[in-house]
Image (cartoon, rainbow, N blue to C red):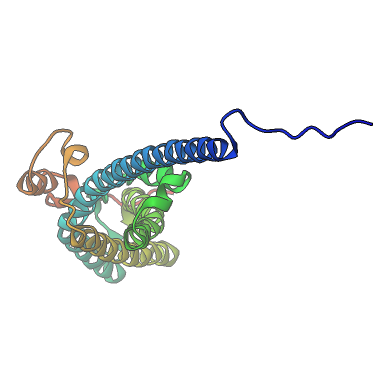
Length: 246
């Protein structure tokens, strides 16, 4: 008959138990240290991501401030063109109008925000930060689209005023009224959006920068001076036109 062999460690089971405890504690310490290092790296990435997004928003705020400054010129130009069209309804003649100008068209930046969105780093942002900044970017996107529409309408208005110089038909007057009506709305909407976005961004303690607006570092005073030189802020050129020839 075979005897069952009893396994007995050289130093006893108690020693084996202590060795297992030591190994387990060592593994836990190593895992904890690794997790701590990963948390620190994740925190650093989150801080860097927030800083990049805030720098991006500072640039965008400068773009929106430029648009707010130009709003006065746009409203004055629209009033001038409307007065010319009202006079043309009576005379049935449109003078040759040049130098109308157009609104500022600058795309806003969103690369840093999109990188944060499509990576795990956004999950490490404070919830209030995610919601607040996300709201700003969500409002910027439709504003960009409206800005492009407005600029296109300014160019269309300039082209129509040049082509229609001279005698006017009812259809000509109707087309001009439609363009000036839509342009008035788009200019108003973009002016409101730009002002609100500046307020939202600066309320988060982000100071506007003007590197893109000025192509160099500068101040708000430099932006005002640059806007004042833009065509839409200059006197409108109005000259009499010869009658149209058919």
